Length: 79
Image (cartoon, rainbow, N blue to C red; front, side):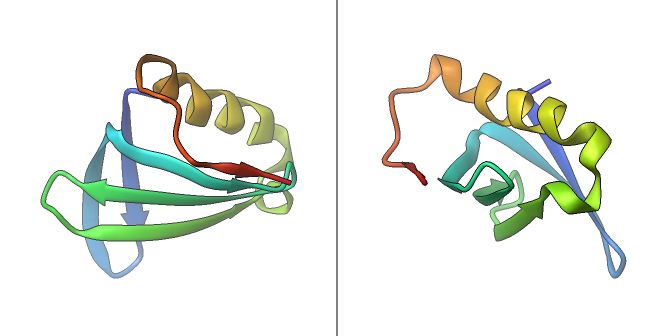
């Protein structure tokens, strides 16, 4: 929904990410580099690629930018 995100890892418990700390740092259209900080304070860099889930890619992109609608413009770079 763009407001809350949950990161699942095979070797850790799920971590809740609030939208204020989820930022698209780079957008390549076929991949996103995302910076986020969990509510517990852990920082994460995520590399997300369309090839891993092509059917869900557009929904993921919409959700990633929907959370940014209420925040000031970031220094994200689009290529």
